[in-house]
Length: 408
Image (cartoon, rainbow, N blue to C red; front, side, top):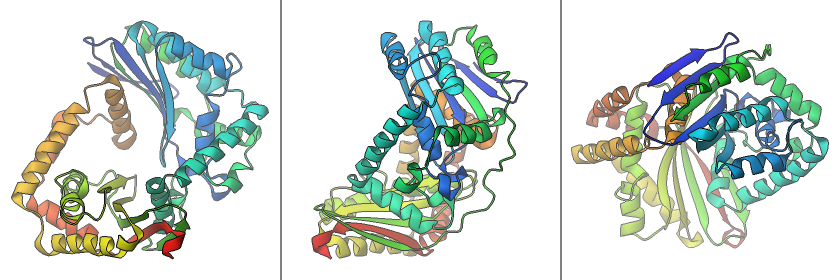
């Protein structure tokens, strides 16, 4: 059973009961992400996400960690370009306690200056980790190349320069302006106790924050730019990026099928031709990211420096063949079967259900049923996928390369 409750202050509460399990997953979702930041505040949303774990006026950071460890719960958070989420999974008997801790973190974080300085260093280390993970860094650099003049192209972690400027006042002011009731969705799924909804309303239903800060004023302009970086790694890393669909585009499911056929599986064209037939790469795949008003379709490959040119040539031969000859009915059939299985399996855990319900609310403002999702998938055909191939692969692409210094 799924219910939706809207508090008088605008906070939306989604509850899906699954009485045959013992777990409860809950998340505080905020419709604010890195693309809502000004250039000088780039990275502040992610910094706030970190700081909410660093102690409140009621609990120290260690006490927060110990509270969840004691009850065997899992506590985590993430920041994306458009959303921030603080979430937890516990046994049903500990659901109220977990919710109260999450609420304490959300409303009463102390933003202690000493903790801010320590967390600044932690995020510096996180930035270094990205730099040491080439497929992450090549993606981050590609977004800057594709959208150089828009916050959606900026790194979620921010930069060293912006990170250095964040203070207790900066963090609290940003949170006050952006973490407002109408942007908040509380999503809960699992063996939810009957009284938990009342607890959520008590904790979240009365707070008020007025904000005149607009969200996403302009539609990002895609730029087929090129970025090349040298490093001391052994491999070269190539990422091609094409302008793609927004999250609400009615043709998004055709893109999902197209991606599956091109490079999302071990039977995909990229995997079979680049890895299995030509042995050019160990890691080769495609993926896409879709946001409110734009998106990107990307193809990644990692190879030895001497094979970088032939890797790119092979990828472009595959995309040219797709544009010229399209996909087959057999490929469509297999892709749809796999995607249906993946979709249904993704609803097995309470955490997955909690995430799906929140995303539906934030994207569509309503619940999108499993039946509707499957109907949209079954409606995809050769014509729709081949049209998608022309629309996306027929456009100029951006390119991000990371290669060893010795290659240059």
